[in-house]
Each structure stands twice: as C-alpha cells, then as structure tokens.
Length: 384
Image 1 (cartoon, rainbow, N blue to C red):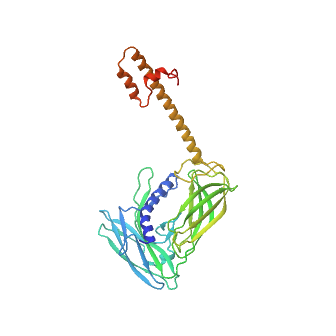
Image 2 (tube, rainbow, N blue to C red):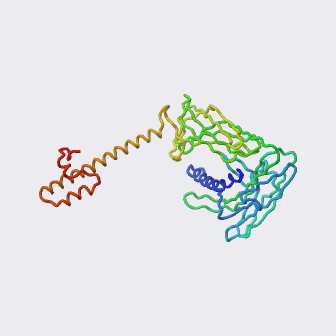
Image 3 (cartoon, rainbow, N blue to C red):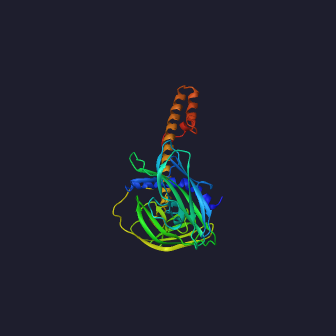
C-alpha cells in the first residue's frame, strides 16, 4: 500500500470525527454555523469507479487528459435532491484533507476537472454513474496535484435538540493527479499567532508547501517566556500538506491561558519520507490582556509551566500521593483500633469462661490482627 493509500484510509474516519468535534466546539462557543457539513455514510455514497473506491490516483502528462467515472448512490428508500460538483482541495489546520463548499470558485487543479456543478433528484439504489475528464494543460510543471468531487444533499436536513443545526450530508472523493517528472519536496514555516480558545491558549504557525510533492511533516513546538525559560512543548504530527495548494497552519492548544506578556516559539518539522525540513527559531509573539475570562477546558493538552523549576504534573502528583498516604494511614489506624478493642474484649470473655472459638473469630475477622493474648499483654494496645 502506498503512503497516499494509507493516509486516505485513515482519513475517512478521521474527517467525520473532526467535523463532529468542530461543530460541537463551535456550538459551545456560540459560533456554530446555521448549517453543518457532515460526512455520513448512511445517507449518500460516492465511489471512484475502477479505483480503490475512496479516491482516484491517476498519472496524466502535461497536455493530456484522462476520463474517470464516479458512482453516486442514494442509500435510503426515498428520492433525495442532491448537488454534485468539483471542489478545490486545501490542507486543514495541522494537515489533512479539506474540500471547499459549494459555490466556491474553482482554483488550481480543479480547473482541469470537466465536471459541471449540477442539482438533481437522485433515486434510491442502484447507483448512478457519471463520467468526467481530467485535462492537464500543456506546459504544466511536474509534481503531485489534487482535486475532488463532492456529493451532498441540496436541501439541508432540519436539526433538533439543544444544538439544532441544519445538516448537509456530503461525500467527497479525492482526485490525486501525478504529472510525470522530478519531485522536489520543500516547505516553509513562518508567522506566529496566538488566540484564546475556551480558557486555553492556541499558538499557530503558518506553513506553506513550496515544493511539488505532498508532505506529512512531524516535529516539536517549544514555547518559551520572555526570560527564555521553556514553559511548554507540543508534539506535531501533521496530516497531508498538499503541494500546489494555499498555505495552511500548524496549531497547538495548551492547557490553560498564557499570562499576558512576550513569548517565543521554536519548531522544527521534517517529512519522514523525503527528509524535507523547515524550522522557526525564537519567533516572538505577544499575549495581550484578556477582555473576558472563559471557563471551559479541553482535556489532555500540553501543560503550561508557571515557574522556571516547577512542573504542575509533578507538584500535583506529589500532592495526590501525600493525601493518599494520609488517607491510608488514617484508615489503618481506624482498623487497628477496632481490632485491638475487639481483641481486648475477647480476652475479657475468655477470663470469664467464653469458648475459645470466640477468640479465633477475632483474629480471623481481620487478616493480620494481633492475637487476643498479645493484645492483652501489651499495655499500649488500647492507645492509638
């Protein structure tokens, strides 16, 4: 399996989760759109005919063309008004596949796709097939290009519940186009920015694929304060950073808000397959005073250290361990006190002729308890 195939298969499930999380986050902050674009395999299906199903992977020389087919499938029992169109692809934040919405002007490789934007009624199964051509202009530079075909319901489905979003269910098939020639991978990082997000700080760095090959950079973002003390770091593992596409962003959300002041970001990213690398060292940004304080939190985020030698994880861990130790000591003392009292009582019963079985039941009721004889002989047995 090629790297593109592996990434594409992982991407199918990831995109649905990403869209859902994005909708929920936007709703939580009161900025959710009136209509949510959601990928759902239960309503419509779009398939690359003659390919692996999830995307087209074609090689087309400059000045040549290729004819492809998609299968559009209504998986319900009723006709659905749908819209299908070619969409420009871009890299979402932290990499990955994104396709522009209906009505967005085409650009890049999408201009090579002869697929009319149409609205029609799609009957239930069997699938409807539609042919289209990919024509690469003469003189096009070698490299990897990408576009897509989209199928979605034309009339939004009304939402319900507390977060009532009208839903547009859409399916997307990517078109990976390779124009023969040498590949020259490269990318750049620049332009640091900061924003507050639900009581946390988000730090973003602009990233651009300046070469002609799709990349998947990985690395580490390191955050320092104005005294050059490291206060946090975040691992970066990007999805697809598409060649011949607009610039994207690498962003990390940190646990808690940064205090107002000046900070720097250093980051080195490398594509593991090609070795292409880019870095930014000590790029400065300023955190202004917050207009209002948000209270919502996002779990499992990189920690922000508030002092030069204090790690919140270690401090909290030590505090929890101490409290746990005190709790266990208290419970042990309570148990020992009850055992000693019961043992003393058993000894008294023995002295007035109580059967020996009563003494045995004392030591058996609490494993490890002292025998009545040793408890009675110890003058400190009744003291805590």
